[in-house]
Image (cartoon, rainbow over all chains, first blue to last red; front, side):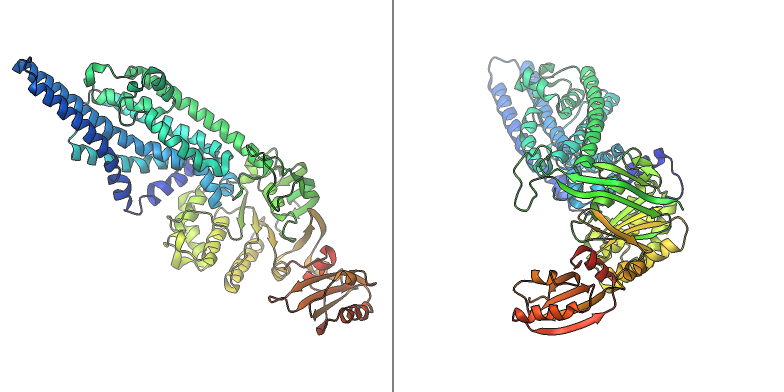
Length: 304
Length: 335
């Protein structure tokens, strides 16, 4: 360039430039509203109907119980209905967060690999921007694009299944939500370099991670049910902790709090720690990947 | 005069056995041992030069460009771009260079032509108020204005390559690396690109282009100086005119004959400096180009052709071209 541009300006423009592809480009074809906004409701509906069926059976048992007084029966039915509402809310919330997890796994983590296959990676690597700006742009764009889809699923889910929330602390809710997203996408940024090193196996790795993480992270049920050991192990995936904290903030009375993993404050602290950890690891793995790419001369070239 | 690019004993060896996380046996066609892509390359490209690099596939051209673009580390030797060491100071180099390769498929199909170029300009920190008018100007120049709002995925390969060229120029680099930029393009698209590159270098101070090409005419027409590279070594560096003058004392003969059983005896004929052979599409005619130190060798060549039972369809003595220079040095044509 003839004129000198400050590194800060280069990096900010790079973030915006790369985010633009997802913010504008990815929303250019309205078919996403059906495929990525409304179709996920079908997956959610299965769990919703199962929980509603369980709830209906529990309420029927309460109605038929001759030992209960009318007052006790009414209170027990109200509690059962609240728990069913919470479970349905869990599923809708889990379905919403699934969009982010899928985006991290299939788009963010695999992105450098796809960029290489498309022939973009070497152009990125020879540009004067920081590599973290590139990944930051991808993450920012991914967050925006997926948020639009997730909100569509959330609103449709709440409307269709009639979920009611008890929002107790909106600021905490926002803090947990954003910390979860940053930690999730930080993990995606870290995985992006590692996936690139794995090359063509990246696809298989994503497939391998998808289902176990779905189960272990408790996208459709409180993760504590799996037992404390599995729940804590699953906490390395930020979605598990984030979902647990969001559910605590939106459904505080669920089964008297016996299925929560940790306190919201502690979960937020761990999430913030994961944000830092994943971003630092992302930077280190990017540096390692670039050094290896330059030394071996293969990673930035297509079909290598 | 200041140097835009300088290499000293630049060597790059690819160790075929070292592949991260994939220690496996080499597949068919893969070299089992180390491959020397560049072997002690010494090169100086002056500021403001349009410099060509000619060589067959696998000669080391792309490896050299990748090292100069800070995408690859040399195994040994040094390389400087705009005065900075590619190994120690890659970041200042990156602000001054850009690269466009032939057949590139970069960019995103969902974005428009204009958006794609703008996006790449952002990675160089070009402010949008500077980038956007410049993109429009370049779209007009390259005849792509009509496609400015078309999604990239609907562009033809020629239109896409023009877009890639604009991507290279929009950041206003001091040094531009063009790796086979007109590969597979039609005559018109190639002409537009060639003319723009020449005007860009010659119309302003301090702009340098390193061009690799398979097309001899392109190199001859465009380049101030040329390097001929083969097997990772620079065989000659000079102006196209001087390179051709080296062959003035030699004679070039072109023959078209029926396919020969064995062409190796031709090499041993006294007075034959070098020759190349190519077949036409159907393989029914063999085209031979001879660089002769002694014109009398042509009778021995014809005798050998006849001895093998082949018929001579065409024989022509011609002035040396850049292609002939290449054949005399490398022993085969670029085609």
